Length: 119
Image 1: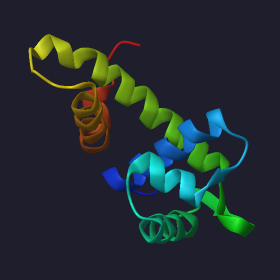
Image 2 (image 1 turned 90 degrees about the vertical axis):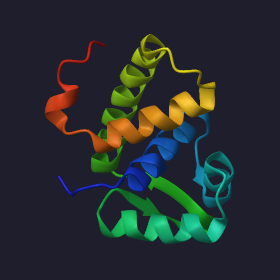
Image 3 (image 1 turned 180 degrees about the vertical axis):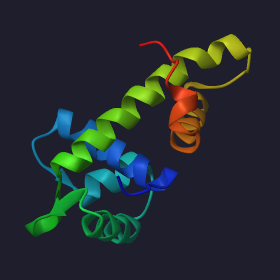
């Protein structure tokens, strides 16, 4: 699979989450969810389209391809597993900070390091 950066994975995961809440994911909704600008979403969606992870339709609607769906689902699974382990470290993190850290870890750690995580 094409190497994805943490930013790529965050965008895919956000689209994945939004797609579960609404039929059509728009660039505007994605920008709100990620707290970024619409031009940032447009740039990143172009990159992800070129990599084959999503398609962008008229009026800024974004849809994951099968490859994008699988990558996003896998990333979400790893993120949730890591996030459930973070309280054991005794770090004083807010929910948002815990999510951010788990996203960074899930995107950065090698696959072999994540294999032993329980569901």
